[in-house]
Image (cartoon, rainbow, N blue to C red; front, side, top):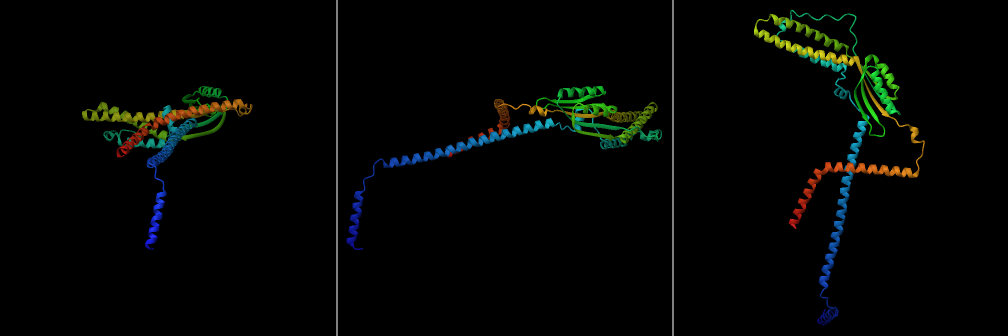
Length: 362
């Protein structure tokens, strides 16, 4: 390109520059303001989404926690209605223990181990004078059977059936050792633990079946004859030992022998009391059988279909049911928030501290 061409190009560029209108004085300020407006709108949209997500997370937390609280409460209520009472519970409540023959043997072994270690001080003196207990007669001992039963009865006449059960127990010569009634649900229920004479056990079960419809029934019979007479034999041995020890007390001249005898007498008396208490407890369980009865109210099926509800009645029932559910939900929500309050306080403190640190950094 020669010099003439360069001059021509330069003139053309200068003419283009002269044709460009001058930039307004407030152009830069307007452009900066537009940038700030767009940035604020973006921050506003971001803040709106942040608030929406925060509110949604809070709702999920509160509603979810409330539903879990409600489910836990319903499960506990159903567990109470099922009346899953174990044998150990009845023993703790009623003051007696349903001991099977296996556990009774374990108890007898414990007693025997204690007896073997006790009385070492004076046993050498009285071993030759203490006679062994007489052998059991060939005819055999009286059987010791612990009988028990469990019944689940449903009835449409709940009040009448409950009174009939109580009256039947009294007529058979028994008593009610435990009673619990749940009248807060649509179907009322009651749990009774009754002690009836063993000779009236079968007739009582038959009479209880007449108070309603038996849906569940179980019976058990524990033979504790061997353990019972083993305990009785050891009791007789201890009683014979006690008689001999008391006789030796009158002949003891040395103070040390007298003190040893007194200690042995105390240990022997303790063993006698324990063995006698065990026999008394077993006699009570043998003489009086245990019957656990769960009585449940049954709503007649025909009452549910005899009359079809009108639209207005259905709407009122729906409103009432919805309101009751809403009130229960609010109650469960309050319970949940009360339980979650310590955690919420800790989270709030952490959020406040983080915000303060961010502001200081800015």
